[in-house]
Length: 89
Image 1: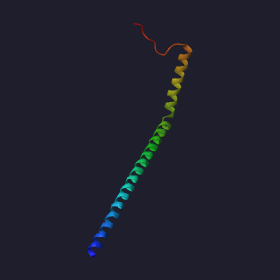
Image 2: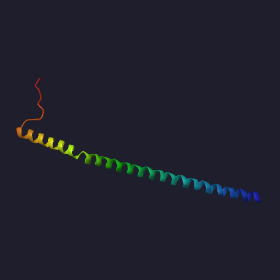
Image 3: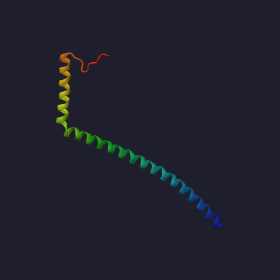
């Protein structure tokens, strides 16, 4: 009789361990997805931080290039000439 009770106790314990393992697997998977998304967000923010730092450190050069482009465009429009001429065949 005690072996039947002991067997039933082991069966119930095994069923609870199976459900506990399933719940543990689901929670571990959710934790992994959360870690991936937080790492991705952190890396994207670091990327934008690096881009902003680059632009701030090179603002003078970027400004000079933009002014040269605007000046070239205005000069070309005032002369009424296209930027590139096609050569005849």
